[in-house]
Image (tube, rainbow, N blue to C red; front, top):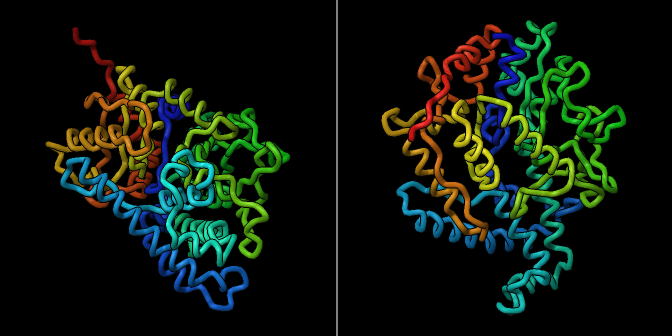
Length: 404
């Protein structure tokens, strides 16, 4: 099997866990860090110094309510494990709702919001918008490795080696990411192996930019990127993958990312077209490799479940140490139970989701040496020897017969 055939049959979906070994925090850990970050604001900070006490009050007010909601969802799920935990995305969502509280339908019915919030807002009329700016700054820092991408370089050595060894072979590797970080761009572009994120020579996003030029990696960032920014109706990218955020003037512009919104589905580009590309490439593939994704996006799950159940040759390979550590005998059923609970959760008042996935479509990555089965080890094994293990895995997928 050629690499062209292997990568035509395979697409990759990266969640937050895929960047963990590069030094990027996951959403839950970000919220754990937020309190200390507020405490660490210098009193004479040019932008946030005068807001420090108010930020602490907001944190002490919002975090317990979010923890209560998460615990209630855990209880209602009926599972022994704590599936739900407060995270920075949910936290930002609450702040957005407070900012837009007068426009929310229930607001006239429930009367005034907390007196405590109103008192803080009277003292600082722009408090919530400023707090949101502060959190944006911290999120950017938490997913920008502090070691100058040293760990990220080590993480992606197998991929760089693959590109070096196969530079003359015709193929495109299709990666779809849910992360905003710049791990792939910084590492691979520094290694002179360009990553194509869909931007033309003028730095404007366009669908036609994919599958073109010298870049062998199409990297579709479904939820946006730190180096993207919106100007009128066009999405632009900064040269050198600089971050589209000025900490001293945070209202100037922010990265064009879907952060802290109730729904991750948008009908505007590039987000809409990137999702359509995911669906198209998924239909053309036989193997979906999911790395570090916790399956908390119902809409994305529906797309994946429908595809897998409708195609007898389709498989999903889940790369996540949490599931690799489970005993093999009950692992499939435990994951399917977990997925059913997530898909049945109606806290966002969504329509019915797909809840049933055929276990025959499900595979889990377990490291050959029995060690930590994360992204780093997966890359080492599956990108080695010109993807020999990936090719063997694809060859092992046999068509199933329908049962009547």
